Length: 221
Image 1 (cartoon, rainbow, N blue to C red):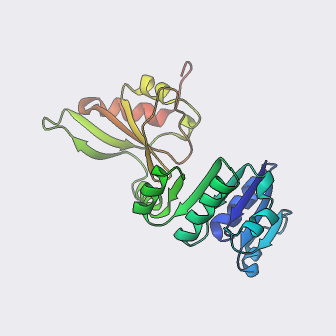
Image 2 (cartoon, helix red, strand yellow; image 1 turned 180 degrees about the vertical axis):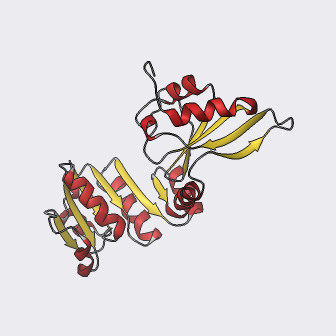
């Protein structure tokens, strides 16, 4: 499919490389032509100099045939305006905007513009790297019997359903943190790379639960 990216910083240039290597056609928009130096040498997509929410600039980048649009410049306002133009003017369904202010991200998500709250997601990832293994306890009931905790897990669980993780561990997956946003999982929800997994479990069973998370799926799961 054709994807238009607004912003050729580190995120935009990395997205362009990954998407193109996946067989998609890509157009990158930036108001500063010098920014295109960040693109990989082998990048063969379009480089469009202009304002990312300007109609003519978007048309030059192929927005009319695009199936996805990512606004990942350094400006929250520009990203939101561009995302809304892509969604509301050109009818692009797959739209995402990078937002630095988590409060704004929540507001715009409610308005139907999917956002990635950079600061909050980065904080989550930094925390996970500071405490890369084991359990990060977040809440306990007054008796101490039940705990809500974030658990590290084997990469082998990526691509498997939450229900399989629950069956193997005996814990209940309460929520996922995905790109800084909370996700209430269903039984068919699949664990994605980068997800933070928060579970409720009986404190006395914590070793069994951690063992299942670290071991990865077994046959039948």
